[in-house]
Length: 286
Length: 220
Ligand SMILES: Nc1ncnc2c1ncn2[C@@H]1O[C@H](COP(=O)(O)OP(=O)(O)OP(=O)(O)O)[C@@H](O)[C@H]1O
Ligand SMILES: [Mg+2]
Image (cartoon, rainbow over all chains, first blue to last red; front, side, top):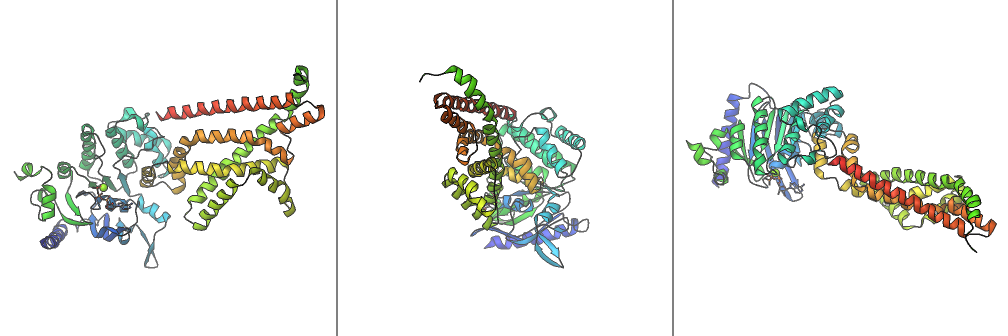
């Protein structure tokens, strides 16, 4: 089928652009190599190769069930790849090098590498038994070894950034969904990860609170310090914040490129039909 | 025979008061044993190491389905044959504690399973170590909803302490029986013991209600 041809064509093009623009500057902060993941018989990821450069913001779009969440969860070590390797800042994530051979990583190794990654979940997952402030200081104190005052300062600074300093003493149950998600973002940020994963951060929210969360993410993205992987169904948001958009379907990246290209002139039929479900076309074509 | 107030107040009450602390301390120590050993069993059941979780499973099944009295007799009368001689108090709290630990382990398990998966995942994403995860994220949330059930087991264990008189521990009921056999008056001592258990159980249940409400408030 022609889809296959288009796919290889896109991949070649992608290598070209990466070669000229980014490769000399820095090494990828995240590097998936031939990563596959199956749940029983169901192969969800099929030999995915995917790079994320330091500071780069990549939006991941694609139909439901295509494996986007799984891609992120493998990096967050919530799920283990069936085969393939993932490197984070030059270190193997799921493997350890012992005498030149790759062996399965233990929890200690995962703990070391995992510190570079942060994640924001669809359902926030705040700790309900802790105040907002405690949600933000617990890991910096226990995991990073910060003093209580340092952690508090850092947490309050981050709450200011997401506009919730007045909620420091509240419990998560008293916050709206949008506020909870902003706290969850702040909680991930206080750990100062090099890579942040957002898995549909607004899809569990009431429509009226979606905007406030997207604004916070846009602000963070504008700072441009962290690499970001944004899984989203908000196409205009993806277009606005990302340096690159990757279209995921059937367990692999079908097409990727800068948003100005991908949304305006999608090459594969699949992406075209996927995008036709969102009314982005008209705005973009001018 | 009519109720004799003088006998009740001057003889029965003081003698019973002498052993009240035995009933109470046996309950508390046995409960502590049950809480700690129950948690150990709950962890063992969850272990990835199959032999451990299977062993824990059968231990729980076996203890739960045999009468506590049999277990007490075993600890008190059989173990000494193998060189383990325990005082009635120690044998009693171990027996009761281990018996109820199997029930508490199931309570813990239910509590742990009630913690949403997302909490584990958030804890992993923040890079908490496994021990920290349990201590600061999972157990506090697992225990909270099962506090009423745990409180209930404390009361059940308290009511079960007269069984300890079977291994010669002189607690409240045992003492009442001794008074009865010495004076041929059973009404007063036995009635007092009943009232005592009523007051203590009711008090404890009120206390747990309070505790439950306080923990609930802090959540809101
Ligand atoms: N833990 C699991 N056990 C079994 N199957 C799973 C598990 N997690 C995901 N899957 C399956 O893997 C496939 C991909 O799931 P994934 O959540 O990665 O998709 P997605 O692209 O994020 O979809 P959505 O847009 O709906 O979030 C689905 O078919 C899903 O049923
Ligand atoms: Mg998903």
